[in-house]
Image 1: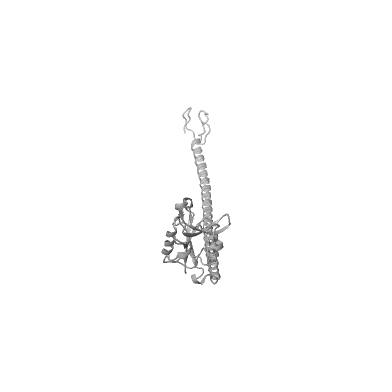
Image 2: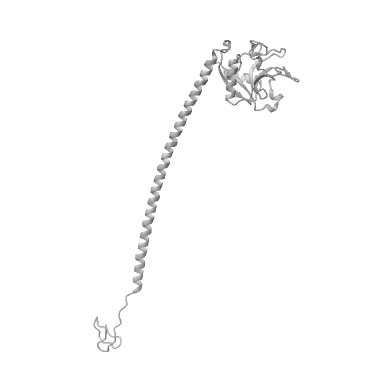
Length: 265
């Protein structure tokens, strides 16, 4: 290099010009590239740290998700097992109840009126139909409007009504009288009245009538048919005579009427 003052040649490493004594200026190292390099190194380090932390967090999330899914699967298996156990218990309970009903029927069958075959199967229908419609619907179902021929049969039917919570329903039964008669009889599948007089003092149900019944008519309305209902004042089920179409006489009974079908099975 040459001296900036006199132009003389200066050897590398000399601190002064040998001709004029001028002090050679030191070359300054570039600062900006160094700073940039430092910044780049720091950024790389920060990015690496963030990437590592994100990777670890993602790994933790995946592990937690896997554990959660395992717990869900275990919960499903336990729930399915519980449901299966519940279903088995319900089936067993239903079987026990059916067996008890069969035993009850068998125990009372011996004491029931043999002319009617004893206690049978009964179906308790809730419907705003007339007595005539109820009679026909039971025939259509393969049975008949119930004929209660003994106290044992009656007690069995009442126990079923009570166990089913049907004390708010007025049920039609299969008894009626002719318009020119005051004697009630059971009605067979062909529509013929037969047997003992139901409302006689000697028939088994003489004490089951509601006080003052049968009344045969209510005002101008003829009451030719029989039903039973739970009488709150006396605290028991009672017998009563009613018209064919009860709703025509008492519309407020809508939804509170029914009938009992009997099946000889």
